[in-house]
Structure formats: C-alpha cells, structure tokens
Image 1: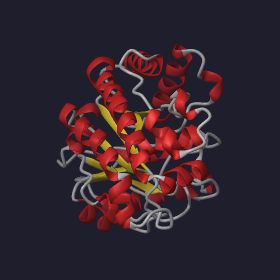
Image 2: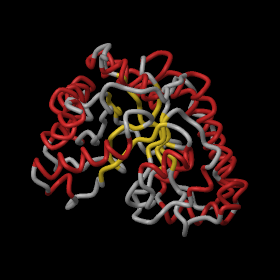
Image 3: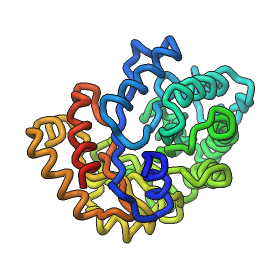
Image 4: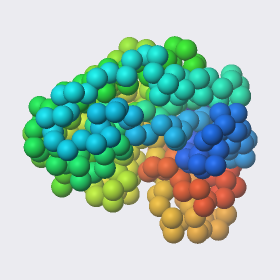
Length: 318
C-alpha cells in the first residue's frame, strides 16, 4: 500500500498492511510570518519522521479576531458579534497557506487541517476566566456568539477542503472537562455550535477526525460527545484513562492515539529499544483494523523528530 492507500483504508475501518502512524507538533512562531517557511517546516517534519499522514497546524490563527471581543466587558455585548465573512483575511489567509502546504507535501500525503470548535476560538481570544464569566452571565448571548463563529468556521472548512485541497479537518473539541460544565449545560450551551461545524464538515469529506482534547490535565466528560461522529476519533488514552480496545468499542470507529504526549514520558526519555517495545505493544493491542498509532495530543517541540521516526519504523516493519 502507498501511504495514501493505507491511511484511506484506516479511515474506512479496513485492514491495512501496516498500522499508520501520525504524531504532530505545532509550528514555532519564527516560521509564522512566511507561508513558504511555514510549509517547509511541515514538509521537513513529514520527511524526518516518515509518518503516514500530516495533521496541519493552525498556528498564528488561533484567536478569533472579532473586533467585538477586543474590549468586551458584558455578556450582552456578545449580541453585537458579526460574521467575518468568506473574504475576511483571517479566513482567506488560512486557506491560502493550507494550499501552499498541501502542494509542498505532494499527492501521497493525506492532510488534515486543525480546526477548533467555535467556543474554543472565542476562548482563545478572551481567555478561560472571561469565557466562563460571560457564559454564566448570559448563556443565550454566548450561544449567539458561538453560532456566529460557527458560520464563519464553516466557511473556513469549506475553503480548506474544497479550495486548498486538504483531505479533511482535525476537529478539536474542548471545554468538556468534568469540572467545567455539567452534562446539561454542555448540551445546551456548547453542543449546538460544535455540531454545526462537525456535521457540515462531514458533508464535505469522509476523511475528518475528531480530537477530544484533554490538554488541561483534567479528564473529559466523554458522554457529552456521544453523538459526535467522524471516521476517526483522536482520544486521550492517558488523561481519559481509556485503553485502545475500550476506545474502539466506545467510539465505534477507527481510533488514533496510544503514546503519552507529555514531556518526561517514555516517548521523550526512553531508549530506542524501549520506545520500539511500546510501539509494538500498542500495535498488538490496536491491530491492523481500526487503529492509527499516535499520541494523546500535540508533541512538544523539544522532542527530537528522530524519536517519532523510531515509532514509524517499527510500525512499518510489522
């Protein structure tokens, strides 16, 4: 199988010759100013690590740039939020940059572009304390804001898939920590805008992945995402304490993960033999159907890419 054939089969839940591998890192800020340098960093990572596909970074474009969020004080001000629109530079620049990266990586590389859920884009602009204060002050105003952002994110998703040529999105849903919202609050306040983007993306591509992000070191209330569907789920094996076989049953689709992504763990400190042993053990658990070998979340830039190559080499030899 080519890498594209292997990854496509894995997304379809079919048997593969070798378990696909994909771990991802954020692009350092020094490369953000030049789209070609940004692309070169990701192409270099593709070559150095020999992973089977690439999750493309959204670095530089995390905070949603709505002017209404610059100085917001009251939740009622969220009703002033207006769509950016398809021609806004924030949306156009992401599409154009993705087009450059996809072209540089070439046709054998399946690409997924990071896209956040609407509430996360807002939080990345105003911060967690303000997000929580505003949503509890007036949930309906926050729902309005998230709906507005969702319409823009759908425009971004369409441009990434239909224009830039990415194969699908890597949809990062957050804010599901067990101590942040009750299940009812999440369902009422957050789920509607999450689903608007995800369901729309699924009409455009059969190669989307959902990332149930657990980077806050607090387990997620996974039940709030029970009906979030995509061909692949990226889950947190270590934070949400769910091993591979359980994850495959729980999510009912191909699952992507295995290694702990946090500094100081085996991937960062183990010998080549130890990392290889863990990769073989994870592949034995996951099997060659419905499993992609990766990590809980993004790999820190301090990790030598050679260590990811160790994992890929093992996977490609089994």
